[in-house]
Image (tube, rainbow, N blue to C red; front, side, top):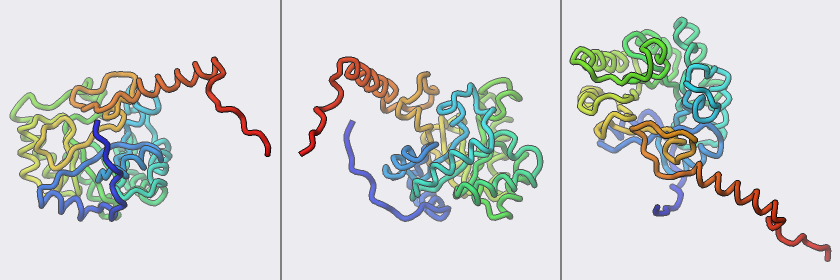
Amino acid sequence: MSSHPPAPRRPKVTLRTLQRKKAQGEPITMLTAYDYPTARIVDEAGIDIILVGDSVGMVVLGYETTLPVTMEEMLHHTKAVVRARPSAMVVADMPLGSFQVDDAEAVRNALRFIKEAGADAVKIEGGRERAATVRRMVRAQVPVMGHIGLTPQSYLLIGGFVRPGKSEDERERLLEDALALEAAGCFSIVLECVPAEWAREITRRLRIPTIGIGSGPDCDGQVLVFHDLVGLTPFPPPSFAVRLLNAYELFRQTVEEFRVRVEQRSLFPTPMTGG
């Protein structure tokens, strides 16, 4: 792999930045981060958006799905990312149960991410059924990113991690979902595992940026889970993820070398003596 110097400190990425990039055809970059050092790495590499995703449940906390992740856990990790003072926009994922019960509670929880954790925006899953919630959040001065296609928080309802793409009716519903979220005030929409042709059409029809994950090359931007990108998980990445490093094995070998050197009493240099 080639080595590049860290990106210079840059102006804060804002909603205007993303809209300008879409207008000028400049790809938008987005990665997850869940802690201070990872946020520093991602930001210094020049990424536009840091997503504090509820994927933290699976790649950091050891849950089997994202469903058990709580508001308090998401706030905790968002605060850690914000402490890195990134130039990237910080978007916090709203976990299951934090916005589905009623709109008033959804707004209160969204405001907690802004006021308590310091996030720049929140992300919620769902299409037309979330439009009213999005409107309430935007009226409360909370920027909202949408998320349609494969929606992991719907895992139980739809019977697994089901990708869209089986019928023309489904294609129309996805487009209507995207248009409804845009009309409600979303500043961007994540398209997860949407067929590339559908994602291209949605991207063309929307005035706001689309961020793809497993949805082909024609979205306005792309997002991946950091741990999938660098190979920092003990399990295989999703089929659509790009793995550019095997950090899990690199870290394991490093820890093993530490163990061997300690056992051989060869880890540390000769102690300094007083002069």
